[in-house]
Image (cartoon, rainbow, N blue to C red):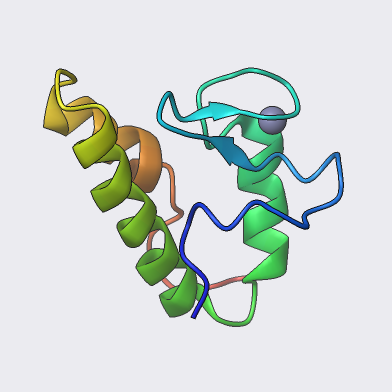
Amino acid sequence: MAGPTAASGSPPGEHVPVTPAWTCGTCGDEWPCATKRDLLLSEYRVDRASLSVYLGSCLAAATADLAAAPVRPLRERFIGWLPRGPVTS
Ligand SMILES: [Zn+2]
């Protein structure tokens, strides 16, 4: 099982997180950046539960890496953007 930081081997343009700062390796925004969120939503469109698990593992890793950062904004940043409710698309 690949961890959230398994970035090696990923082609450029994948908007993978750069740890321990958790910035986007492609556009430099805080990860997950807006582009990555769109990519994740389409990648996990039929398996939203797995996306939540994946982002949860990222959040756990980021919380450890960014020990000085408050937890609540981190949780909002990693998980709070996920659409709630049933998939309508
Ligand atoms: Zn990006």
